[in-house]
Image 1 (cartoon, rainbow, N blue to C red):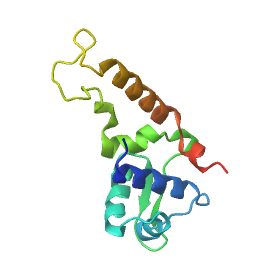
Image 2 (cartoon, rainbow, N blue to C red):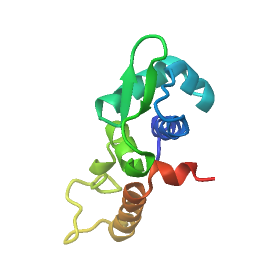
Image 3 (cartoon, rainbow, N blue to C red):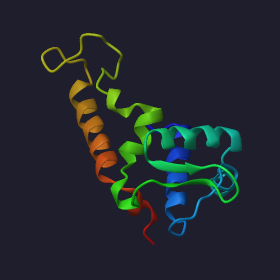
Image 4 (cartoon, rainbow, N blue to C red):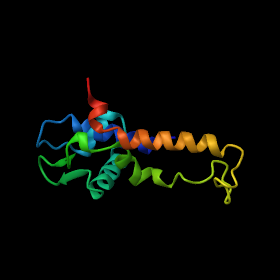
Length: 132
């Protein structure tokens, strides 16, 4: 239910959350910390910055840092730009006409799983991930 991109995004934001206040980390440094490809992670971090989750600064001493406190960033916010988890409303079997009134064979069970998963993403913050 989570792609490698989603995993890298969550791990990168968690790594940035552990930086001292006001400190930036470059994409290469974060990539090494979380064992991700450098160029790929740089693009991913830029996407998260474009979404307002990270701040970026160019030049010496620059890089990325959280744009807001870790307890105000949810996993949903991190996952949505790349995973589009909000679109998970469709039929698990891919049927175009699956609904509450005309459910497929797994509609009820998938609906519960999907809603629990989305609730987990909306209620879990980066702070929850980095607690020791």
